[in-house]
Image (cartoon, rainbow, N blue to C red; front, top):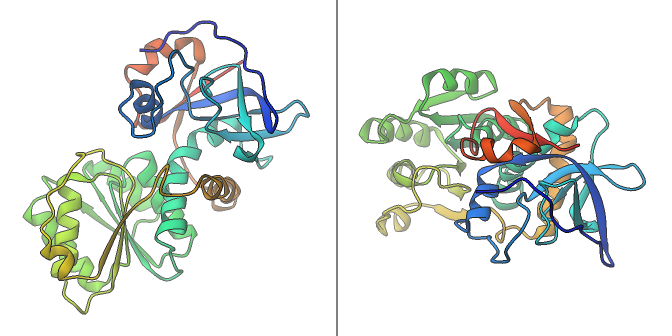
Length: 308
């Protein structure tokens, strides 16, 4: 658990800049890295939590920054970050929205552009579309030119909201069993080009099965895995890959070069204004981090700490 208190002052070295932080999001990756569970966690203790945020430079520029130099994180009044890991923010994108949209939005933007290489007119299936990242994935898919977006989710009311954000077809997950797979087969027969998966587990397994069973005449499928909210592992018979044109890939820290990830964030921030991307947020003062940490993470609305 984090402790709210004092930490040593960060001092920038050559090529680095000091950011006066105004807002930082509490996301699952922040909690996972802090606990050591995330694959990108570092071992240096103690450290300041937070992987990204919004702030101002000495010259007054307002920026989003990512991956500050350890042990300094974004949940602090000041952070040190390489110049190359900052992007200027549009004037009409407020600090809280920018901080909240960056991580979940980048996961979709990088997956669709850098990994799947979405082409306008294609069909995208978003598996796990009711969370913040999934909702943004629906909006971003449409913004990038997807002709059709199919969305899966567990909560009926949330699925109505996803449809309002642009999903053309919604499929309830249920228990991710035979009924789910049957509904998927119909969509794969019609043609699905990209699967953007936030869940993994049984639903991802059923999606791969449905895609494989759609037949050799179905469109090749680029399956991009971005999160494991349901389970960390799946069982995958080899025949599912041999009998279909499915390409499996991941998207995240390590699979996308850092400079391309920063470029994706820059593009996302500009598109957020032009596309009117919607995300729900809730703010807290950083002094409440110990209380809020226990209950927040991959929640709706997204939790953002405002830092004086």
